[in-house]
Length: 287
Image (cartoon, rainbow, N blue to C red; front, side, top):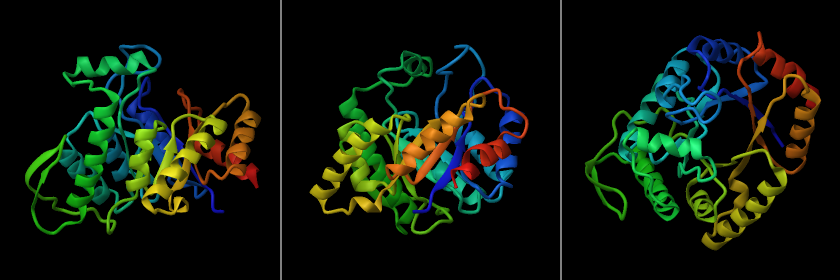
């Protein structure tokens, strides 16, 4: 089983230069195959009024300053941008990166995190209930894939999304389209994963709970006739600079239970040569 290790740098409470430094270094380290930002508009940890960067804008800048890393947002909030606009943004980043985008998307609701909910009112965005969030996510995935792949304009009359004369040009570099990674744990979201995802990311590092939700995903795949093995299992694991042995143990536990795509979340401030440290102390010592 090929393990794919990546890093995540939450773009909050940090400077642009610090993130660029870590990503440029990671781009030179073959053991690190992918790198991620998140998608929030106000900080969800630390100083509530501290700095935070818009994810897709920052991702495009980092795409232009790297040449090898797969890259993406883990995951885009489908609540923030209309799906046709999101398809255009993502296609642009795939072109800028030369075809290195992994397209992460999710329902965007964080009901257990009050600091996340405040960003909706602060930006004039509606906060719909979970059923709406999941239903609109399914339609968004359908629309985005069509905009990336269809050669003629089309209309779409969904329950949540209505488009007239929708068309995407340029297409993404990757054909038929960038890999789709969907994050979430709720059953409704997992149903969307079963239908649309190439990769499923479980939010959080609880392997036991991830396995339980993975069993639900397997059943949902069976219901629609999809082989669940087609969907790569992904997990985010927090990194401890002061206790790397605990992080290595978490990595071993995840890999022993079949997770092939691991995202090592780096806390800020980032130490000097943080990416090389990840490769030397966490990834290489797994062998």
